[in-house]
Length: 345
Ligand code: SF4
Image 1 (spheres, protein in one colour):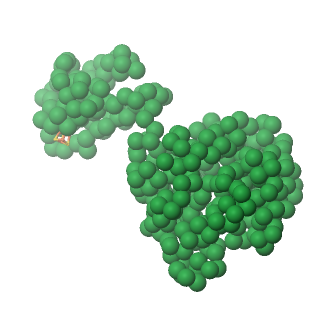
Image 2 (tube, protein in one colour; image 1 turned 60 degrees about the vertical axis):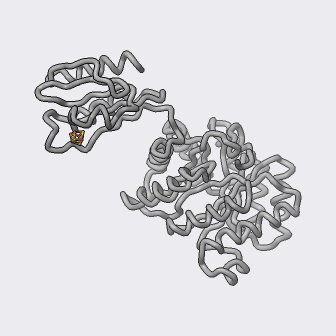
Image 3 (cartoon, helix red, strand yellow; image 1 turned 90 degrees about the horizontal axis):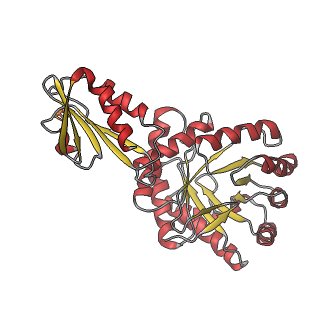
């Protein structure tokens, strides 16, 4: 199990719920716009928000933003160690830096010291595009180089008495990301922030994130996740939540399983499944509902469902845990089934 790290009022690692993160794309110093976007992300289910700190005004704005939001705020800093210090002093709950682009070890040590004094966690974020020089010389542009860079930085932080660490090793290559995260999981017990970076836009970007993040989660790797999409960040959060559901990491929802239908199906399975899914979308309890095309395979295939329906000849049967208990006319199926759902939700 990974170590537990506190970020504001959220704990990650150590078996805690996997936290969903996203990043604002407003100018951080535009406090009104940034707060507005964070509120939307909070409402969508974002647990931790990251903001870019590109200049002094962004760092100072953190103090005002923090007054308006409920979720922990992470300051994302590149190159300028002074901005990292200023962000911490203005109340950031965590900072994200890539030690490889801070100009000197002395300056990096100053950031570490400041984080230590304020009890603020640091995410060491290594990306394929900014590897540690020695790691790159040894391993080229590979998963091993990503992991080796992170391990070298951990070593530096620990030598400075700092252990409040979250790690991320990201690449736009799904395979490289998975391999690097697995190496890291074998080498350290710090919590990992996982995601496929720069995955792009559209369906392919989502598939890359689902495979990259999802395959790590099913292997028990990943304590906080960020789906990276070239899109409205609200979509990142919504999709991240779907990944958590699909991998069984979020069980508090009503899952509708349904068969693809085939020539045996004699009722409107697709329409019924869609309407049932819409009906149960607000349920926050672990319930499984099956919508199956026929009695030949339906109840048997969906044995573990709390409630299910399966089409027959002009009739539809309702079943619980694989056992048929009621038969209704095809025309009444939706109305009657929704009543059954009301009884168990
Ligand atoms: S449950 Fe019935 S209708 Fe659905 S795919 Fe299986 S055999 Fe076909």
